[in-house]
Length: 131
Image (tube, rainbow, N blue to C red):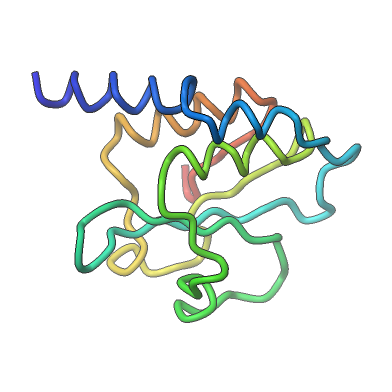
């Protein structure tokens, strides 16, 4: 029951909170990034809340310090969804590419499916690295 309530709340967050309403007003780029985008996730050490970082794709492996830099950190699913809504339709997002899964684990499977599903709804191809 707790998991159902959590998923219902998260689904509501993606569709109802102000961040999503305003994100729709932001023009999306006409074309996807040449090397796509990279998504990283980790639990906050103090709160246990899931944190994210969405960075432009490159051929260079990013350090944990760069990924977790506060200027790159997305601290909620609502804010992550708003960032997805500002990407170009057809954008490719690779999740946790080339990082230590002990430092950058994936959230629970239901949350992963929710994020991938939201990406699809915005024409964003979210792919978990190695899958």
